[in-house]
Length: 249
Ligand SMILES: [Zn+2]
Ligand SMILES: [Zn+2]
Image (tube, rainbow, N blue to C red):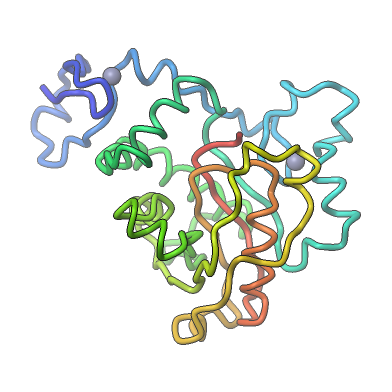
């Protein structure tokens, strides 16, 4: 029996005929860890950023959208950017998991999210074409780290998550500088769009023309990163840009 990728306890999954003989019995989390990962119910989420509307004050909900997304639409800064889909709510448990993944370099944790990432990807496919096609509809663009941050961390978490999905990945963006710590800024400051820290990796970006892009990142917070990344991608003339994140924070 496999151990949980996060807490190291035995997984204790019921031994079924399938997982006994499956050579690729997927690595994953134990039941107690899985119970602390709270999925966002797609039926009750903001149709634009994927956050759970039932957890917001009513004055921050406009029909099936949240007030942040209404503000983004009014700002005229969405450009080719359409929407985000997020898998889990941010909570203290997931915060600890992400710390272990990103800051303590436990890359294997991404394997535990593979099934849900693939499921969310299929949802994005259906959302934009109504059916699931055999050939992936999207080119995945992981949100990059700066080269300094990449050197320090050794891997880009967005890239590691994107690789779980199994659709083609294009490293179309380069991050030219890091932002000051988001947590030190007010929400209004974080929603304001600065000059983009991204630029196009021209060589890779020629592949984007006319394609549907799915930006991949670990977390969607205010949506500013996605707009800034989309702005940089727009010059490569993609058809449209959506995003998929593990968490809505
Ligand atoms: Zn566990
Ligand atoms: Zn929203």
